[in-house]
Length: 91
Image (spheres, rainbow, N blue to C red):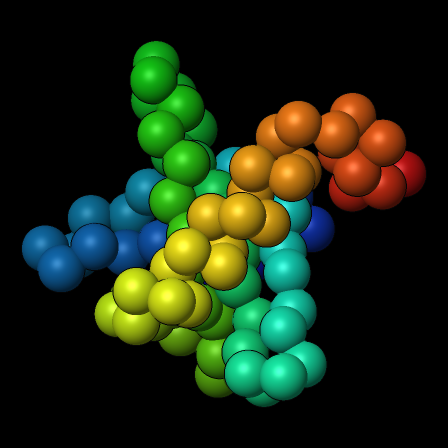
């Protein structure tokens, strides 16, 4: 993963192809000691939002725990439903 600025990153897939991703927001969970990034591929008509754990080394890791995934899904739903939270990212 290569972060272009605070709003975009480049992700290389398993075939070596690079994809420009738009970062919606990040979320840190101090209890789990993990950070998450919510993003979608630039140019994707559906704007399918993905979420991954990101490490200090810049690696993106799949969320494999159902409870953890439900938690980040709740965070995303709260972000989606509350324009005030969205403004925090845009400032």
